[in-house]
Length: 295
Image 1 (cartoon, rainbow, N blue to C red):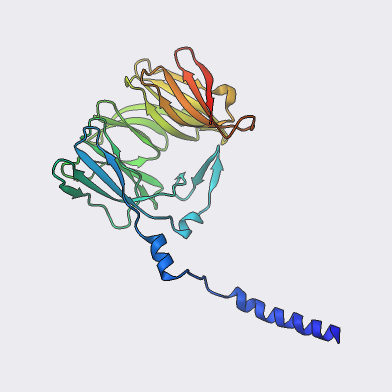
Image 2 (image 1 turned 90 degrees about the horizontal axis):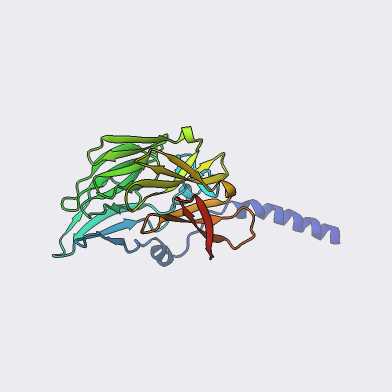
């Protein structure tokens, strides 16, 4: 009798399992969905000359299909092969420029469904730059606009990574897929600074220009899991490699000191002998590095 009851139970459970497995994806109540998907307040940025306020709207959250894309993990970074770029979970979708003096505003004309990074002010506050992701072409297009009219002008269609304004606001330093170059505000290439492949680098990040504009530094990644700091001098055209003694520590967050003599950077260490984040400084004159503090 017990075997018969057990057999009936097994047949019953087996029969209902496919039904449960075929249940559709369930959504929470509409009120919860409305709260989660409601447009967040725009992020604001005041121009250096204090004349304009930039408001950038963004998606409340990335889509499931985007987050499900295949990723590659290289030197602590998450790479999206489909876009040939680092994984980005926040995309901006609109730009509004408001004049602080009278409250008038200009909405920048952007294509429907566009995805861009957070806009950046030029040092003099007279220009704004931003990059638009071209998902089908695996590149980014660099645009500039003036806050007075908000009319986008494309400078470069092969922008691959972060950009950096020159100190005089007359040009932008950018990475393409193969090189580091300087472009003018009308899109002309002013200087081919260096070839990334010649340095044996696969990826770069954290570009920063020294306060006096004479040096440019960034983090480079080679062989997938080794990172170092590269410094380029515009006057001498000299390239200096730093951080060779801790190549396997993921480096990021480069920042110049106000006097231009030091660079600070953070690391995720391969061997966890210290807490997760460590702050370091590098003196380029003496080519040395020193642990500042631990966070």
